[in-house]
Picture 1: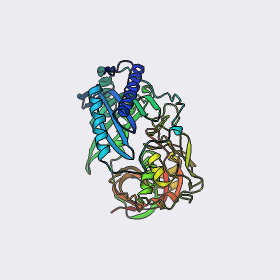
Picture 2: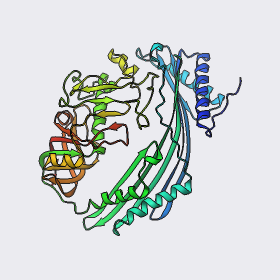
Picture 3: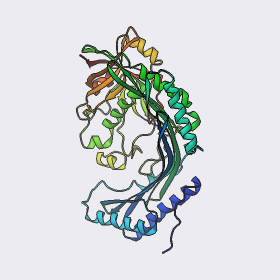
Length: 451
């Protein structure tokens, strides 16, 4: 049998075409070997990461990762296998393994590909690929500059690490219903972690940024200073008395609350009956000014995607409108289980956005008056079935809209259903460093457990 060309990372468009041909080859071989249907996901990523500490280089890592995930169907039976080897022999071995698994699996009436007529036919260019011509020496220089700028802020600071990373890659998905889609993407990041000693012990904090375009990252010096300032702000921590007060979640922490919402309305949680929002479809779950929607086609955004994990075209859509839960988050499988059409969210949502009704963080502090500003969350105390929420937290005590002193090792507690309904404000200080796009959240009536 003819040997298909091996993948090569040099030219991204060549890589993309080669990976698409490999996917087409796997689909063809799967049919030839007896599968009734097949789907294939492949990704290849290359990158560089460097880390420094106290003026010394700690790590320099180059990576090239590649993997094919092959899922085959024998009627309503399903089997999966994976390989990082692109040779014909390795791929045929993975296909044979997946088919063997499928033939021994139990039938699942809901298994299978999305219908052919639902496959995406037009894939917009979302401008996600912006490689960074950065070599190891340049990355080390940037990391050292970041660390030096942080340490220059205060002599009491020491460095835990400063890091620079650049990644670029290609993702391809195809299935035997005639769909093959691909996308190129980049992701660049910088971070610094600082430590300061005090009479109360060691305090540690960090700052980071991430973007598809390297020039959009802050300068290494600016990022280092931000990490230093955040760390120094933790000096002088005090305890607080247990009280029921408003809690202001800084935007990067509020993104996690949106994540809990998505987990609760995901199709898998609903058909398993393991969600605190099981009976909430069509009901108000937020105040009436709140809208939560997906924006998958934002150019250059970290969460953007033209197609989902089933090959369906992604689309802008609302999950919450005027406070009312309008839709579950569904892929083809969970949709079938619930007797509903897919929302083109196999694999998750893309650029989830919540509406804002307030100003920046300073305006939200003034709106809160007295309460707790949370800048750090710890632990896993969230019950997705009941909605009970109890997390360790760190941040700042606020009175009359002004930060008074840092606090640590407090507990904040409530119930997510109540927290959503008691959401007073969402700020304009939009967190863009991930898939959940939100400003800070001001939530009324939470219990803060202190000394």
